[in-house]
Image (tube, rainbow, N blue to C red):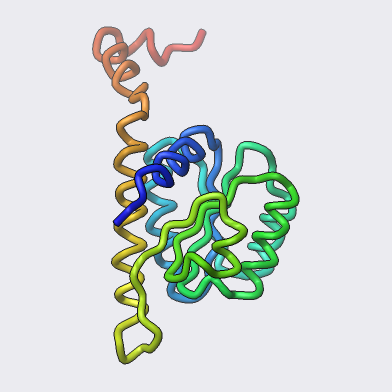
Length: 170
């Protein structure tokens, strides 16, 4: 179950953000890529890097207006912890989806969404985590989309009225 107060805090951070940088490894990169494509439709710049060195470089150059969104089943990945500490030092907000809210990454996050997970592959751990993480991303995306101004509709109506004037430069 999503904590309503945490959800609203995360939504406020995402609404203010110009860009969302995703940090994840292994199977969690798939979740990050799905989420990034959704948030692009909500007029947010996004980035997902599969190479760990690129994730470090992205964090080192992160500017104001960016939010770091971490996805980690255990919350104890050393490299992700290093990146989160760097973002914390820089003052960037950190969101986290994890199977363990009381983890090291959980302590560094401004908002942590705990989702169900299990320890072993035999228990379908990654699948269970994927479903929970996808649910959190979908809810955040859906609410964020309700706040998006669809400026394209105005452009389309102007084009319908006078297509030549809309595109004529002269």
